[in-house]
Length: 157
Image (cartoon, rainbow, N blue to C red; front, side):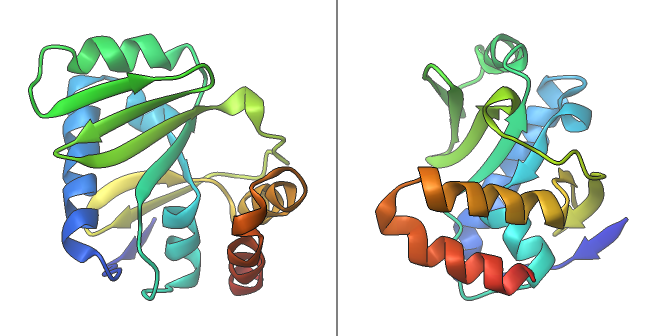
């Protein structure tokens, strides 16, 4: 298991996101083993790039987890739930944790990596799958993010 101390530009908000992840894991048994981190946090884990701002923590899970997550935190005041057709946004003290349906990604099914960021246990998409996700986003994603995706692909290779 890899252990990283990570301080992005928005370190305080990122620490709050990680605190929310820990609370969510505690309220929703089995989620820690099912939720796979990808996006900017996985990029930061592999690259060590501390010059980025982490806007949210992106997870992929089977969509069957969405109602389980909603139920697990429905009686808490720290979380706000915002469902959408292909994802579930959970806000913890104003910071976003995004859960996306794993069926919407074309993965190579490389091995998953167990890691710690700031003592928070996370399951990461492999570097190869993360690169593949960014490459897919180049052709199907938002055009304003293409330069960011290219920079991240370069930082992961």
